[in-house]
Amino acid sequence: MKKVLIAYFSLAGMTAKMAEYIAEGVRLSGHEAVVKKIGDIKDTAEMTEYDGCIFGAPTFSLDLPKPMKTFLSTAAKVNLEGKLGGAFGAYTHDVAYRHDTHAPAIIFDILQKEHKMEPFALGPFNLPETKVETSEGMHACHDYGKAFGETVSS
Image (cartoon, rainbow, N blue to C red; front, side, top):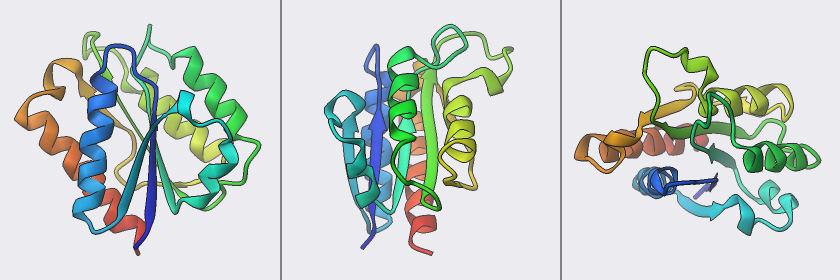
């Protein structure tokens, strides 16, 4: 059984809800999922204990919230090279904006370039806040987590 960390920062609770749904998907694939707020990770070295990590944050002013930027910068000091990495988050702005300016895309880019993590084939996962607590949103999160779990085991 593989072990996956789902670490997130949430402002309005939607990203936290997504983290729980994604964790359920990882568990459906037969693996352990640990969900933590980034503020509860006191020693980033503990991330080396996981086979894969999925990081989440909401998109804030078409950028990554400062607490997640700081966390990812601190986490760069530990060796996550080669571990499977994914990213997710909720957004409220108009979908006409470029999706590469969403927090998940920024996180995903950092995971590859700075942390040298193996990029998850499904890429970054964006979900409008209005869909997070719907059946459709829950299933989309489950699917992302399940696919991540299936990939981390191969």
